[in-house]
Image (cartoon, rainbow, N blue to C red; front, side, top):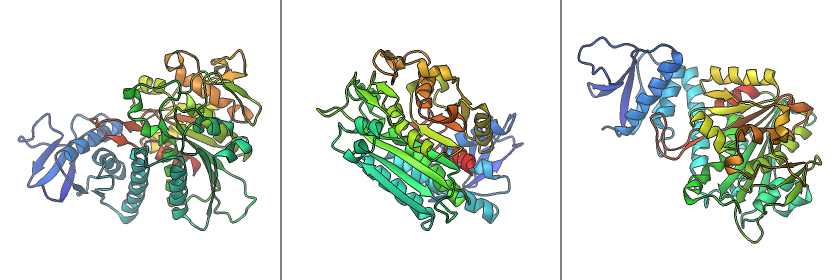
Length: 431
């Protein structure tokens, strides 16, 4: 196999020698993808992604897309299927220069986000995650980006009790990263949107200890942070002109003599008290701080993203991101954005009464229920907990539970590791 392989797209094949059940075939040392029996754009894009995965498994090192049948959407679907660990940018696009430049920007940012998600827990501790995200976003527009990191005991002193308590059991200090992208030049400019990401760089489950198998892939539990940081970077490259703030809630959830415990009660800045019913439901505990910080800006749009619940993975099969919102108008905007960028998104139930689904006898709420997975409706109950920490009854707030953010092993559509799904949707929304 040569280092660079030409990949053609045939919308329909009429030759008798084509094997009926094959999506991919060699013709004169080039590879051809043939789409057959397709009933719509969504189906054909999925077939292209599957074909790309097959091509990568043939040992192709670098794919060059050639021919007139490639559109921007089909090229991107190929890139998602072909790219994997060690080949995250090994696709050469075709077409007009503006299309190629747009795809190259997108591929570079997805590659950065996916590589970040794939790093080992020893490589990527909370402060390192914050620093890498701040540096990467700053590199997109150095004149317009400022950042600040609050770490360790300073978190407790400033009242960020969720991040502090989840992370205090680790030798690696927890931290809250704030990145301010302000292209207006006006320090008093209104913040148009805030992004909040869960940055748990390793999740042992704490005293609600995970099994070995359940812990194995928990390097990916900072996938929400990688997605929202990537979304801001992509929006900047695509010409974002509005002020946007990013908050990453970074910690390791470990077991030690300093770790937070079941039955502990934390009181947040907004006065909400929370009893710890499950130390393995730590993502919502840290995100509450990020949502409070975002709400302080009075931004009309607040988006948080997290690899939050196993319940969302079970419900979607890991094929969709799960969307939760109390504001149906904003939810519709999110679904339209996802459709435009061809990212699978599905809205789940959320009402104001979901706030009461994790009751406590000793505090305003618990962080979960003492049942496996938080019991029935676990993903909606987690979203209900988060809704306590946004203003205006949830107007303008979106919660992405990133059920499709990571695959422990390769599938028919994806290589193993982070996927980056959600980046393009969120970038579209904040623009």
